[in-house]
Each structure stands twice: as C-alpha cells, then as structure tokens.
Image (cartoon, rainbow, N blue to C red; front, top):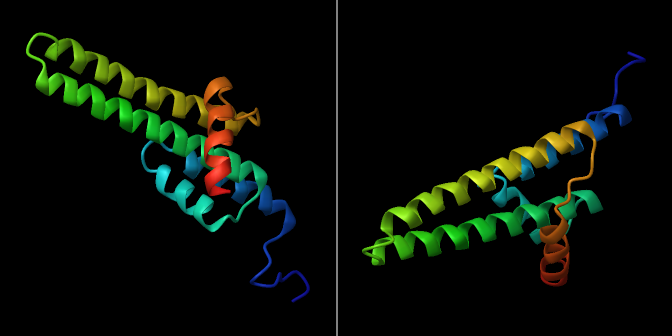
Length: 130
C-alpha cells in the first residue's frame, strides 16, 4: 500500500514523457492541426506546447493555402495542369517531410523550430491566440 500513487497526480518522472507525447501529437501532419488549435483556444499548456501548437497551425495553414491555390490553378489552366499537379504533390510531400523531420528533432530532444515559420507563427498567432 505504500507504493500507491494518487490517481489524479502522475509521478513526476512520467510528466516529461506525457508532454513529449502530446507534442508528437501536435506535429502529426494534418491530424495534429486540431489538437494544436484546441490547445491555443484553451490557452492552457506549457510554453513549449504553445510554441509547437503555433508552429503546427502555421504549417497546416501554409500547406492548405498552397494546396488549394495549386489545385485551383491546375483545374482552371489548360496548359499548366500537369505541371501544377506535380508541383502540388512536391509541396504536399515537403509538408509531410518537414513534419516528420520536426518529430525526429523532438524525439532527439533538439529544438523544434523552423527559422522563418516559427517567428511568423509567434508573431501572428501569438498575438491572436495566446
């Protein structure tokens, strides 16, 4: 009976693992957008969680905007259709590769920042969502 922990309080050595798992969830391409949005909407979480959430939302919006613009251009253009669809596939692959790269950086314990996007996310989304 002495080794039992209270149900509501996890052990302190499990806290960083749970936080890392939550950050991994935020960095999953497309799916991680929604928990990130929820975290910023509630304004709860550590500074690292809020920063990763802002980065995830920014990457998601940039990808979605680029995807929609390239798809619209491909459907309305007669001559550039194939070129725009190929560019769209490269753009989508790049988004997924950047997300996987960020996940590997998080697992290794390195900084989860992108030079231009992180600053943009902190300025724009930091002003309105946190």
